[in-house]
Image (cartoon, rainbow over all chains, first blue to last red; front, side, top):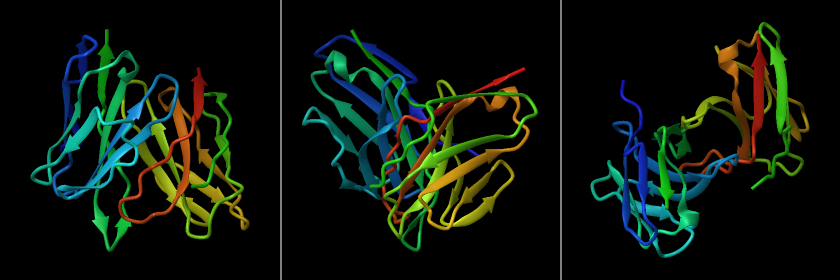
Length: 116
Length: 111
């Protein structure tokens, strides 16, 4: 079966540009998470969706970062006025929610974002 | 969220059993212990989760002492393909709970 799909796998852009990163979760998974991982470090939480709504966006570093999930499936992470410090691997994960309990999160392979 | 401490790196040889211990002294009563594995250029992959005593699945075993202030991930008879970073996470198992990763343990399996 299909896992979490993220596109593009690599994105190189210039400082100041706008980027969109896409996540296609596992079908039927209502919970969706975005993480950011810098080289040599563990993933860092950015935002969590339950269905269409962002239930927790406390990890977004600033207002240049925004994410949507309009139909409760595919999600897009949007970064405006990119900075070199935004360079990282952006990971998406999804999970089932059963009786209020998290099932294990399934991760995609990430989008490697490089800001020149 | 409970902070975790685990070795930065470990070396092993093919066929050996590997035990990675994680300390979490301020674990809360409702916290679960979860381990993830990550290969280069891939997202983390769930290995095992437990609350107390021992949990075993087809991949690994997780040992949790009675005080739950530490846990040990045991990988039986490792192979070269087990070379990866292993993360210990502690937190609630409630819906929507984001994962808080530390630095992980970089396991190198040698031939």
